[in-house]
Image 1 (cartoon, rainbow, N blue to C red):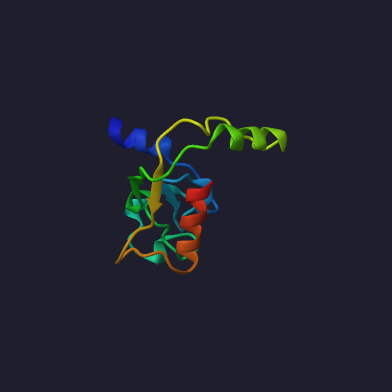
Image 2: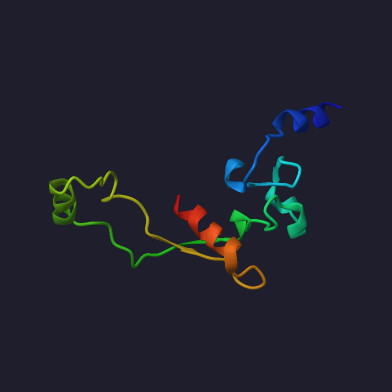
Amino acid sequence: SVKKSLIKTRTKTCTSHSACGPKMYCNTLGQCKPRFQCKAHASAIDGQCPVRIGLWHWESDVSVKMLSSEAVKWMNDHDIENENEQAGVGMELVSPGPPNTLSGLAGMRSAAEMLQ
């Protein structure tokens, strides 16, 4: 069917989760598949299902203030990139709670992914 052929053309080969992107994982067959399909750690190429990105919570935070003109000038003077540091909406990123609390290798990977 057309749907099956579309899925087949989207299957990407991999040797690690990072090769698949943030919404996918690398299975033991070396194929990128949606993370929600990783039900048992044995199906992941490294024995660890990655944490689904959708389990993280994005919350606006009105207590976060944009940088002052003086701070941006200081950054410019020290060759620190500061594009758009005086505009936007403050936010807080909260890691998943139980039963998906970050721990071990999978937790460290998930936190690192969010910082990329």
